[in-house]
Image (cartoon, helix red, strand yellow):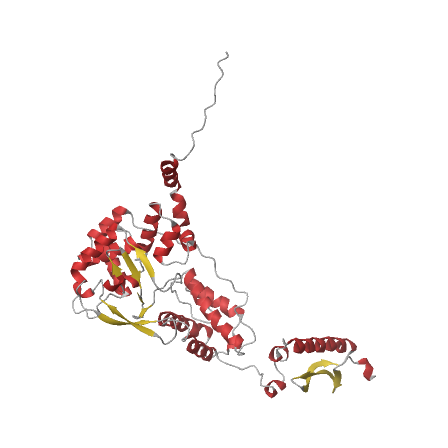
Length: 430
């Protein structure tokens, strides 16, 4: 067969077709493993042209084009095989520098749950799209797939939890692909499960009064009253110090948050490091009441973790709420988020109220404020959101329920501004 019958860069090698091209200043050859036929020569020529174009434009991925090529090691571009367990370790070690310890603890908890399901000793490149869908199903339903695990009637996880698990592990595999450990991310094409947004379930005024009456100590009454009157997060209340409060100006400056891993961090807020809360009268009264118990208490030197990795500040803190007032042998000087949630549950039960999670204290503040006609932007700034979008998303239905009250408010406020309208003159002709 005439040599001219072969496209440029295509040649016969032992009855099979191979192509050659220049890569990093070196001529390389790749055997395609297909018979030398006119049709295959044409396809090989097109492939070679595509490879040359990718090299020229800087988009050539050698392992993706020729995953089994012996030339990969020659250029140091072989696909590095790694197990799922090794990938987890490398990813989480690097993540440590960009996330808080509280978030890191959550990531580790998710990995502990997902690793046995993914297969710790399994190659990361062997995890498939179908594997992930089966794992998601098992997490959601609580029943393990019969072909892989023994069936077990475990309660399934909620949709938000499952979505969170999948999102975290998706990031890990994305890291694996970017680092050259896997050719593609098996999560590609998997979308988040649809979820119904849970509606706020605030306390009514009567329920709040019953709740406060069921608190056995004034400090507990003051804690939950301030939570409802300010919308502060519970970790922020646990870290609240008298040094942050100006009763004359009627403000609280939120400077720190106590996390579930028992460390102080900067506030969890999209609006900035610190935020100023403007206190309503009842909130000021609560703090004046609490001052009798803790204002002249011990001042602690507290380490507060900064957002920058490895940095911390020392805050002098005379904590507003000190568990030593209500609990024996307490040495911490402040409450933890976990203990606060338990106190809420006990008081709710003692008051005979329908069970709600403690976070409803924050929802109660928002809903009461909206009912009173407060501007959503103001509420957002008080609660630590960057803008009112979250308020509209979470409390939109609640806001629309109060449309009749808003109309009454407008009638009351705008009636003096509305110009009088002339009445139609009736004809006297009959």
